[in-house]
Image 1 (cartoon, one colour):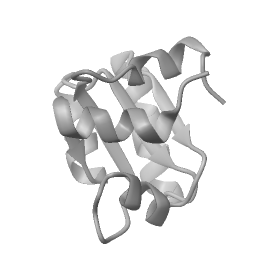
Image 2 (cartoon, helix red, strand yellow):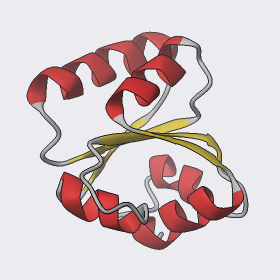
Image 3 (cartoon, one colour):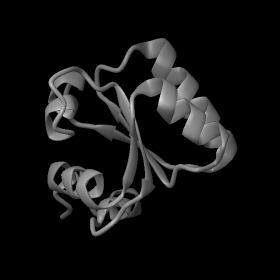
Length: 103
């Protein structure tokens, strides 16, 4: 079982991660993202856009089991984070989340 919170933190510290819904959507459209993570309470119109664009681009989306405030805290940010895009996972195993190893 993958510890998603720990692996997000490791990816941020050792890899390349875009934080925020606008940056995430841009990374999807440019096919830079390897994985997209959205908070459970991400605004519905943003979530719909992310899922639609990610499906077209063939990029997996993982729904974080927590609020955007919790996701912000995991990212080390003092504010809400609705979505983030993993560009380079670094030393983390975060990409295994989409292989069904989590939850």
